[in-house]
Image (cartoon, rainbow, N blue to C red; front, side):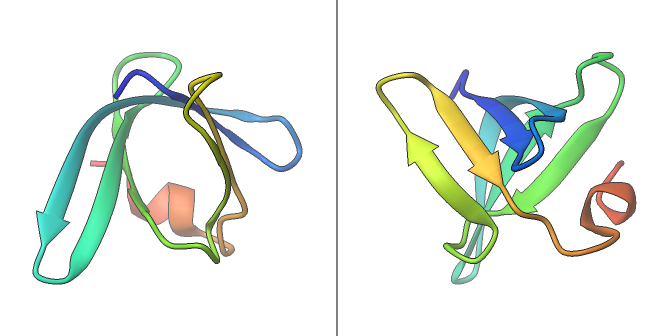
Length: 72
């Protein structure tokens, strides 16, 4: 909670505000930088390529369209 999320290119995605477990899947809920949208990010190694709890930073490599599709 509270970790910043950015893409490998350094583009800000948001701040983790919640973690949801649905069945066997874990999703990070990130509030967008504008603070208007929530973005759901699967918490899997293929997408969350760097997780650094000490610096509260998560770097993701999202598949094409993931960030657009997950805005709610």
